[in-house]
Amino acid sequence: MKCNELRAEFMGAVLNGPASTSPELQKHLTSCDACAGEYASFRQTMALLEEWKAPEPSPYFNTRLRARLKEETARRKVGLFAWLRRPMAATAAAGLIALGAGLLESGAWPHGSKTAATTSSAVSDLQYLDKNADLFSDFDALDGQSQTE
Figure 1 (cartoon, rainbow, N blue to C red):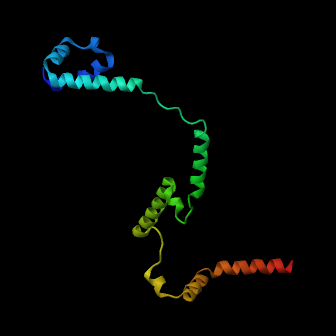
Figure 2: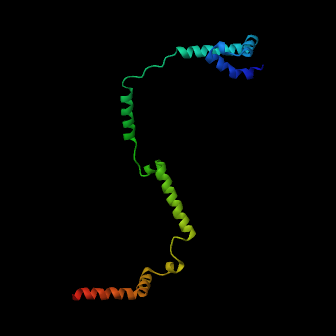
Figure 3: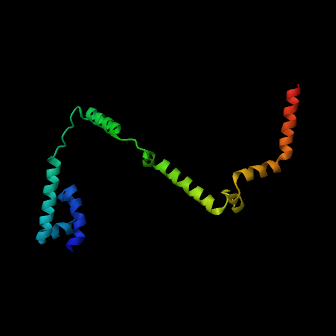
C-alpha cells in the first residue's frame, strides 16, 4: 500500500490503540521506516496530551471580567455617527436614502416644475388665492355668522 493512503488510518490507530489497526497497516508500519516514525510521533503527542491538565481559573476571574467589561463599555465614546455601528440602523438609513433617491429620479416625488421655479413665491401665493377664492369666501361668511351671534 502507498503511504498516503494509510495516513488517514494512523489517527484511528493512535486514538484507539494498536490493537484496532488493520493487518495491512501493521505490516506497512514494520516495512516502512518513515511511516513507523510518524506513527511513533503521533503516539508520543497523544501521550503528552493525555498527561496535560488544564489550569484552574482564578476564583475571582468572573468578577474581574465583569468589571473589565463595564470599564470598556463606559470608555466607548458615543459620537455623532455612533448609530452607524448598529447594523440595523445603518441598513435602514441606507434604505431610506436609496428610496428617496429613487423617488426623486422617477419623478414620483414632486420637486417642482420649470414654471414654479421661474415664478416667485408671491406670484404663486396670489395664484393659489385666485384658484380658491370661492372656498375662502365661504370661510368669511362663516366668520361673519359667528360674530353676529
